[in-house]
Amino acid sequence: MPIDTFIALLIFAFVASATPGPNNVMLLASGVNFGFRRTIPHMLGIAMGFAALLLSVGFGLGALLVIYPDLYVVLKFLGGAYLLHLAWRIAMTRVVASGNAGKTPMTLWAAAAFQWVNPKAWMMAVTAMSLYTSPEMPYVSVVLVALAFVLVNFPSVSIWAGCGTALRSFLADPEKLKWFNITMGAVLALTTIPMVL
Image 1 (cartoon, rainbow, N blue to C red):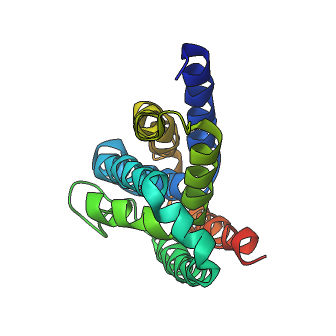
Image 2: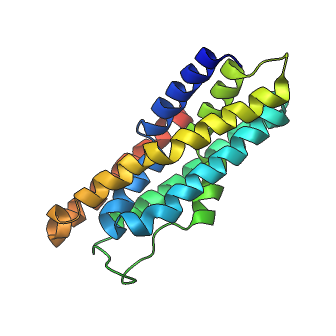
């Protein structure tokens, strides 16, 4: 892959990873409710799960969805149901957790598994593989696409968790926190609309 193409891929990966979507809304809420340090496993899980999804799409899973489009419909509805469950959990959180108190943040494995039902992750993976892989060197280009996302994913999602952490003291007031979490839950629920349409 030429260096200018790889740089374009890195920019695409950063923008795609940093723009609003289910992962970033959950990271913002997690930063507020649990702080940056306790949100790190969630961020690592996103990076790890998305890299696995990219490699799977690049090495043939994407073709399976083209052959069996009903599989994608099932995936969409499973993802939508899980997003609504997560939106409800966020909306009902009422206390900023300190130490090990309160509810627990999303684990590394749960965040990694979530990528497989996250519609934005699927769209990003299919788009990246269709735009940046090369038939002349299919295996190398698939690995390079995954590598590009690994390099930029954690820093880009860290922005959202960091913003949430910065809001912690402002949202220490239970009434403000309640409305923030209700708003974040509603925003997360709204992300299901584009995938249903």
